[in-house]
Length: 115
Image (cartoon, rainbow, N blue to C red; front, top):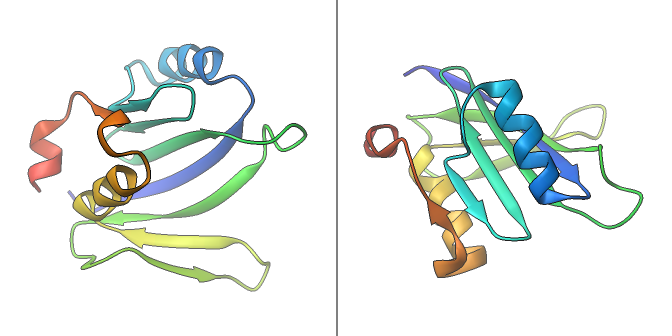
């Protein structure tokens, strides 16, 4: 795998958003934290959604790249004030588990996580 573009969006209704994005992507999320968060990983896209405060739904949370070569989670802000992250699959999983522990339910793509 080369790089996956990462897109993080804020949502109001996690369950409705999971149903909508799963239909759009043609697959179920790889990780779900009930009532909080979901993550899909396609060949070229790493999409995460997270429940946000009222009025912030539908907004961009941040952008980035998932790259196997990334040693750790890195972040920077571009000239327009947009937060960008660079991370490996393993680093992203560690961040998710640090935030939600055992509430983070990982499903498919075991092979991808080994990369």
